[in-house]
Amino acid sequence: MEAVFSNFGEYLDAFGVTLALFAVSGLASMVLGLVLATMRVGPVSVLRGAAGLYVTVFRNTPLLVIFIFMAVAAPKLGYTFRFVEDVEIAGWNVSAYFTRACIALTLYTSAFVCEGIRSGVNSVQLGQAEAARAVGMTFLQSMRHVILPQAGRAVIPPLASVQIALAKNTSVAAVFGMAEATATMRAFNNNYADQRVQIFLLFALGYIVIVEIISFGSHMLERRAKVA
Amino acid sequence: MRLAGVQKHYGNLHVLKDIDLDVARGEVVVVIGPSGAGKSTLCRAINRLETIDEGEILLDGQPLPQEGKGLARLRADVGMVFQSFNLFAHKTVLENVTLGPIKVRKKSKAEAEARAKELLERVGVAHQAAKYPAQLSGGQQQRVAIARALAMDPKVMLFDEPTSALDPEMIKEVLDVMVDLAERGMTMIVVTHEMGFARTAANRVVFMADGAIVETTNPEKFFTNPESDRAKDFLGKILKH
Ligand SMILES: Nc1ncnc2c1ncn2[C@@H]1O[C@H](COP(=O)(O)OP(=O)(O)O)[C@@H](O)[C@H]1O
Ligand SMILES: [Mg+2]
Image (cartoon, rainbow over all chains, first blue to last red; front, side, top):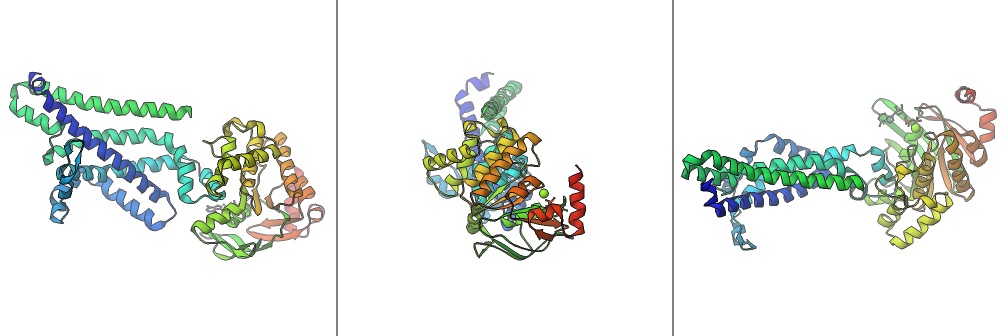
């Protein structure tokens, strides 16, 4: 216990990094996933094919492999993302590591977001899209005003699971030198070998709190969607 | 509106066989025929919810656009009423009627609502405007669907078996709205087995079987003395019930 409490600032910082990875990748994966899902159910066959290929590639590749690619191969190809190091957000200096970790997490997670949204879209009766087209809406208008609002409720549970998985998947960034929660836990373990069990429990607790908050948020959203 | 040499296949199935059909402005054409004849496919081809393999479909002398914005505009000019209503489930009755005018015709909300209320009044569901579709009876939902289509000021209205999902006591309220529409001079293509409607409102009856137009006559003659054996056989079956 003492190991964590006497270094509590470090503990909080570590979860701060975890949360930052989660927040950035979570938001980016929702946006990219929505674009991919729209391409996948849309009328343009080239876009449908491209989005399908994307999902096949990134859903079936282990996250660790994507991380290794971003950390090792991408810089070789000239994508170091060093330019982000000039950026400062709220006193925080964005690192190239952080950026590459977010990209890896986003690439991976958006494939799952895409499939979650697509299953929700498929749960909406076909007649709804036909009626929207029949009054002259374009595909994008019918998605925006008719299909997605009705898919909304059906997509909340699968998207919550995807985001919960993402919150835990941020731990893979530990391997690449991000001082997020899991990496910090390992450092604590090395320095306080006699308190490993307690250290483990306290870090697990941190993850549990994050996941519970996401679950709670999703239940609230679901309840609100039910009323409407 | 004109269809010339329209052909459509689903794989090996030839669903529309060389369809020629002219519908003059203000004319009401009833399409009748056994299940699987291709009546729904014909309606869906006319506002291009389905593509056709060959032939031409012209509206006001213009061929149907293939894709994109032009196609969306065409669909706005062709009103469609489905057997299963297909009202937007997450929108109120009023919003169902104003959504198209606002998003597609770019009308102001106030203008769209004023017109929607007028149309809901006309089809007799004005007092239900704030409800959701699921709270309405089938007959009321179908009348809202007609108002939704009319709100786009269409040049033609297509009805695909608008009363066949309804309980008998609700059929009349929907048919009354359609008869009124016909009397006001709307151009209509109506797939229905309702003889009463065909006799009061239709200028012509088109009998379809196996993807082809078998005969075109006036309603009186069709129901009393049809020419083709297919039509006699078909009428024999529906009149027994
Ligand atoms: N999407 C489709 N794919 C394959 N066959 C279809 C499809 N839609 C309709 N059909 C077939 O086309 C034929 C005509 O169908 P339809 O136009 O619905 O007939 P109707 O409305 O006169 O009952 C039927 O044999 C039907 O099984
Ligand atoms: Mg049909």
